[in-house]
Length: 250
Image 1 (cartoon, rainbow, N blue to C red):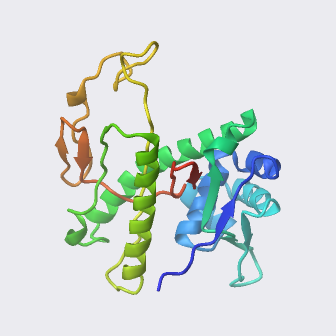
Image 2: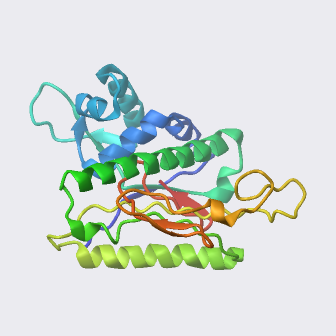
C-alpha cells in the first residue's frame, strides 16, 4: 500500500515569511532534490546542483528555519544530513493573488518546474543511453502538449481525474520491483483567444500556426502537428507536481 503523502498548505497571510524564503530558485531545487532522492548532506547536494557546499548549507538552514526541511539521522558526526519535512507543498491560486510577494512565489515555483522539465529530458536521455533504464521504458515515456477548449469546471474536473488516477496507479505499483520513479509534470494554462484585444498566437507572434508545434524529444519522438503533441522524452523534476484546480502543489 502506498504511503500517505505529507502535505504542507501555505497561507499567504500566515506564511508570508516562509513564502519569501522559498521564493529562491536554489532553495526550491534543494527541496525538490531531497523529496525525490532522499536525505543528503549539503556537500552531496552541492555536487548535484553545481553549487558550493557553503551556499547549499546556508540555503538549507533557511529552509529549516521555516519548516521545509529537518535534520535526518546522521551517518557519522562530521556533517549534517537533511531531509524534506513534507512530500508536497500546496496553496490556493486565488489566495496567492493577495500580494506581490505571494504572486512572486507562484511565479518562481512555476519557473522552477519549467526548468526541471529541461533537466528531466537530459537525465532521461542519459539514463536510456547508459542502460540504467530498460528498453521497456522507451515507448511509455513522453512529453505531450495539446490545446483543447474547456470550461473552468471541466478543467477542475480534469485535475481531479489526473490526481485520482495517479494515486490509484502509484498505490497499485508500490511494491512492484519493476517500478521506477516517474516524474509527472502537468500544466493547464488557459489562454485568451487570438481574436481578443492584445492576445497573441501560440507562437507569440499574433498568429496560430499549429504546425509549428511539431514533435520534439529524445529517444524517438512521435508527434501530431495538428494537436502539437509530442512523445518520446520523460524524466525527473525537482520542483514536484503542479495542479491548477483552484490551487497548486510543488
